[in-house]
Length: 430
Image 1 (cartoon, rainbow, N blue to C red):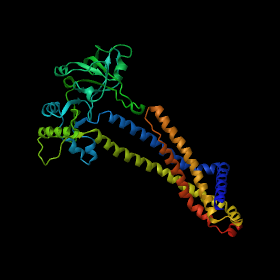
Image 2: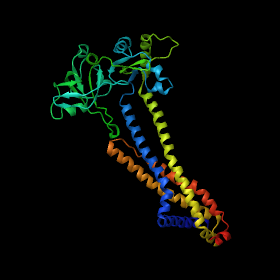
Image 3: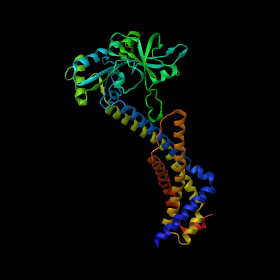
Image 4: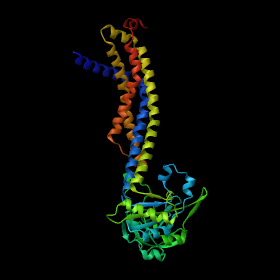
């Protein structure tokens, strides 16, 4: 007998909640406003962070699981609690370090140096006739740059080791400058000006896939032999906190079949000898792999997501307090109705569930509106800026669950208050 009663009661409560929502539009809107804002924030932020997370993971994965990056210091060191002043005072990496790794290790198939990247990047405009590009990254590298960084040469060729040794004034264009300067003509053999020096275009790199459709400027660069780069720019340095910053990075790839840890140990051995480190001294350089970069990003994205959700939840808390206040007023205004229902046989738990489910229904409506607005916000940002988004189903379930939970949690006090009213006193209430 209890089941039909509950079913009928539930239908009645839903219809009463709908009637309340329709008849008292302003009050209902104020009741769920905070919930709508909170859920909109949570869903919108989730879609953007998830989109960025997936995009960066694709970019990091494209670096190759075996590639080892050698840097003066990195975010991994800073994340481990090292002082920035201490990191800046570390010895700078040099092209000689790359040569030493090539000559003194047996585990590495290729060693690549990149100048002009990192803490003090080199940026210049590239000119051809009356055309010019925006500010682009200018890299100096070795002949195996495209191989190490998984770039495809779609037109022409890359410079050779011989051209690197003799400081040849040649340049390979990324997709962005190639399109900007040579939209309808063949760029090969053309003379362009990078800053104040002239170079011959010998190749064009293909377009790097934009993770999630978001253009992060990954094709906004030109690359030349690192010897030619040094001739024009030197190894750019900047004084900071009593130390010197040079934009030098070395990337190494082990021979096929060689364990990456063996290659890392080989690099450590050579670099520790070159930096004259004692056995009890820690490395004064950083070695990064795909796993380490992903691990660092996991920490950053997790903390960022948690922080933003906490901030967004403040709006839900405010909305919950609004629900409690409005439902408490509603209990007071409907005291005679409660008394009448009790007088004709309604039990306390039925009154309790009536107000509890009414609060849950109202906030669930707010949750649905918030999900629609949050998703719309993410889509608008994506089409306006190209920023990647991701709308997993669980973000909708999370938003709906949060909103209903807020209604039940904050509707509990007024519901208990309503269920505890004495029916005789309630009928006398004016």
